[in-house]
Image (cartoon, rainbow, N blue to C red; front, side, top):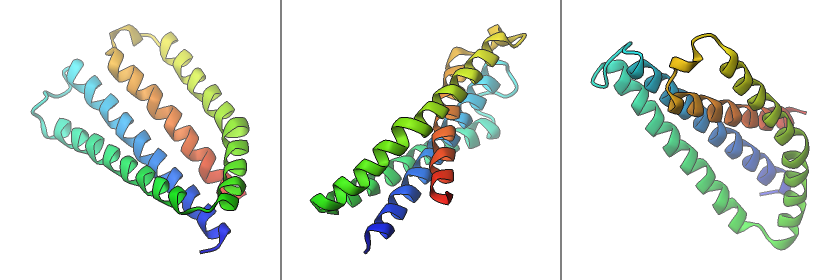
Length: 146
């Protein structure tokens, strides 16, 4: 496997893992809000489906990042340096800053929304983490396409 193929595999695994994490957190935010605001009970089918999405999302995230760890273990010193430098530049500058800005903006918007005080805190926190993970995944996706 060439260095470019390994890099593509790392980007794909990172993107899939972050998307799964974002979906999982959004599902748990919707479930928590739905139960708290009595849209459905904890025993409803919708709550069960959202709980299943949460669990499956976390499992996919774990598998994706576990596979990335395995890829990292198979890299030689030269490949680690080449891929690590590129990954650090990507994450530390453009992607991390944009994820912070988007997440901060979402947090501010949620804070000023009318009726936001009635939202459960765990749902708001999960939604914000979901937005952060989705923004990082989007940044990974766009960096691969660039």
